[in-house]
Length: 294
Image 1 (cartoon, one colour):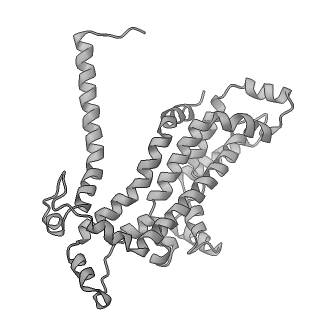
Image 2: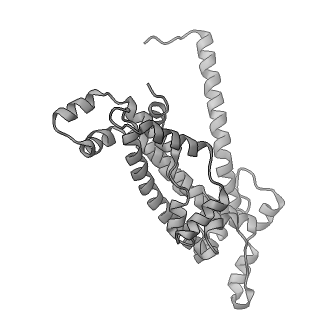
């Protein structure tokens, strides 16, 4: 493939580079600003004097968080939710997608189930019936309520279905000749070839379970059961000065809700910022092949 080296092409490439750098800067700016506020002193943060660099650099907010048991309890609940939610979602969506990727000769009711999925994608039963169902099943105030409360992500199922349908049909024929059944074909052929789309769905699921806060408000009775994002959404600093030492009281006076909350929000960002680069190389490939059906 030849590359256009004309002045017009180089100017266009330069414009694209500048535009991409500007977009990257705008994406990173809120993260950097949150970090700068979390490392600043109380007066500077309250007066709005912090922008791209901490003012009165200190680690007081992070030291306070290290002693906040409720924060780390919510952090642990979110980790459990992500691990259980991602595992169950990948298992369920893969097992649903494989039969739905077959044609009507192999799975006679395929179109019926596909229409049911599309209907649930467009309409839902409403918040109150959903809440009553979860509570009736005994999932209220449990980690399983947070994991199963979101149900099956239909968009992810359709993504995997289309990916499976784009794989060569000759794979099925070769597997059948070798005596492989549906389970063997799924485990030995389709799942290994679907790593890009499964990694994409895993990324979607991790981000959803980590960032979702509404289910924590509705399906739990208090802060002892809040996942991290619900805990952060409800941030209120309750101070009991009766049992404080002089050093603790002095340190508290150096903090503000703004710096402390910024530190908590920045720590909450870190897991997704760490996980995304590991799965990013699969992301574009999985989305592209899984979004278009031949």
